[in-house]
Image (tube, rainbow, N blue to C red; front, side, top):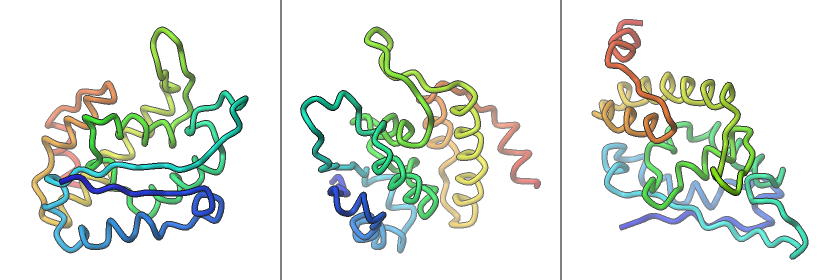
Amino acid sequence: MTYTITVNTEEMQTLNLEPAETVLSPLLANPALQAAEPIRFEIDYPREASDPRELSEVPEVRLWFIRLDSRYPWLPLYLDWEAGELARYTAMLVPHQFSPIDGIRYNPEALEIFVMRKIFVLHRWLETHDVAGRNRLKQMTHLLGYDIEDDLFALLSKA
């Protein structure tokens, strides 16, 4: 089963997180279950035919995702990675450019800060909720181009 968070223009423009809260609230009752139930986004944000921007380049869309990420910082860990949701979510939060040859190209420094922040936040969140997710966290960072050593997790567990 896949969960879908459907967001429209009005919700984006008013920073209304209710569509996400409706889907995520029941999952919060059992954090371990989230790994088995991937989450996707369906974004209904029409643009003019002449508007060349990707959704991640629309300020209202990005701002909604910034607010979402501040409320649910663990969300990237449970997105449907196979459907490209992690890359799209990251694009909403990390400056980037599109290349016809290479596709999305994140700003390297911004991506590094985003990844390290996620490691710190998610490691603590997993430990707090007694969820075994270190391997999933390592897979997530690997998809974003980073290989995280177990030594970092050992260091974080001591801190």
